[in-house]
Image (cartoon, rainbow, N blue to C red; front, side):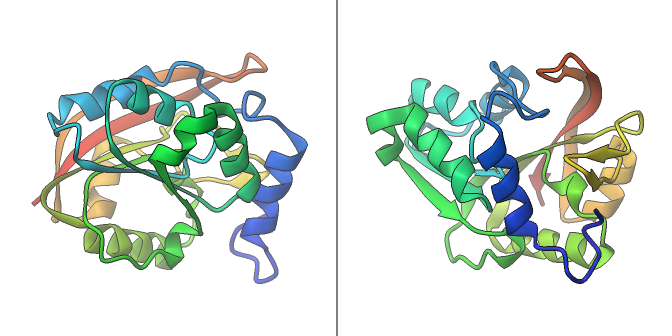
Length: 210
């Protein structure tokens, strides 16, 4: 199925994914999201800084951030089932997180974030208009000096994920897409092993809003 077809229901697709699988069974699952966590720590933002995890519904990253004492956390995900899995896992700690059940392209907020984290969302935007809109949404939500952390499929990544076509990036290509409002600070590659044992190639890039 292609995200560019007119009858594609993005929310229904991801609700089906998370209703049929537990968060530990999806291909992008990480028990220890050390790369993302370490990059957030590398920014040096204070524990009270506002951090948003895009598409992080069932990700373990929020557990790591809570355990480390970060206090102003938001998680956005289009899937109700993904968010509910995370809430169930966190128990009472889920009340310490702002949960946003929404398509990222529909986010309209006056809140500014110090860190914007996106692992495995941006590469699903195969339509150029959607990518440009995502970047506009992100720029609106970030002040100068804020950080973004992207993890996407690299040039050696799979052609599809979860039955959908995906984009592939290297640091130069991603920087060109994001534009001059973001300065690349560092980047590296990762060989992610899925729960089924398949190896996938990711790149991680950390930027600052300029």
